[in-house]
Image 1: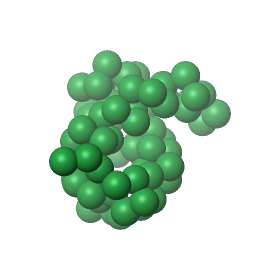
Image 2 (image 1 turned 120 degrees about the vertical axis):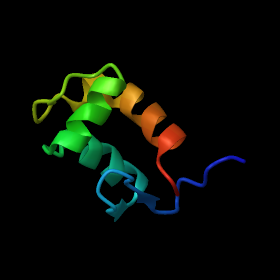
Image 3 (image 1 turned 90 degrees about the vertical axis):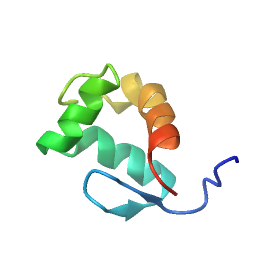
Image 4 (image 1 turned 135 degrees about the vertical axis):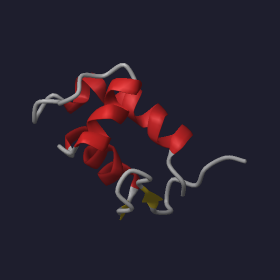
Length: 70
């Protein structure tokens, strides 16, 4: 079943609900260990420098759609 990107996504790592674009930023920049482990599992660095989201955004978007409840 296709996802509806206008609904809120819920982060399974911390329970926060955010819109699509905000969830991508949340997962990219949240600094706790659970989010760092998730980024590493996606093949990303554990921490992403502020302002460098564009480089990693495609991988993060795919991971969020695949793994985060909506």
